[in-house]
Image 1 (cartoon, one colour):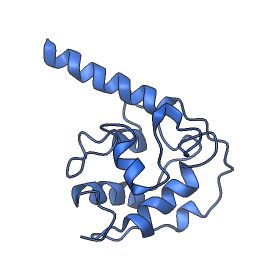
Image 2 (cartoon, rainbow, N blue to C red):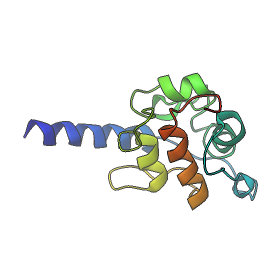
Image 3 (cartoon, helix red, strand yellow):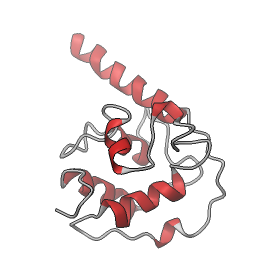
Image 4 (cartoon, helix red, strand yellow):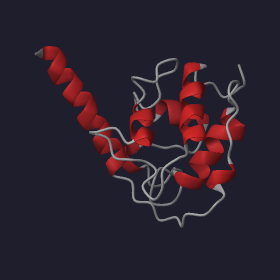
Length: 136
């Protein structure tokens, strides 16, 4: 029973973190131009550009707004502004994966459009590689 309660708390926390985002950006095709390689994901070349276009914008997860107390404007903030959003080496506990996959109990992010399969796989690979800011 205690384990079920803990799981529900994690799900509800994730829903609060990501549901408070208000996307004020206009979708464009620049997000589709970001292609992740199979391995050796670069935070600066792949992850942060996705955040810059779809997440770390005014009214959402930028340094001023911090929707859900989450700042996605740089590597340090991505990992440490909100506990459990990114859990290095563990995609099953990383709430950012729950949101970009649109799992039940998590607000789908980004709200205006979904990431493509290559980008979702790339985020997972980056986390599995340790979620570093350098290529492993």
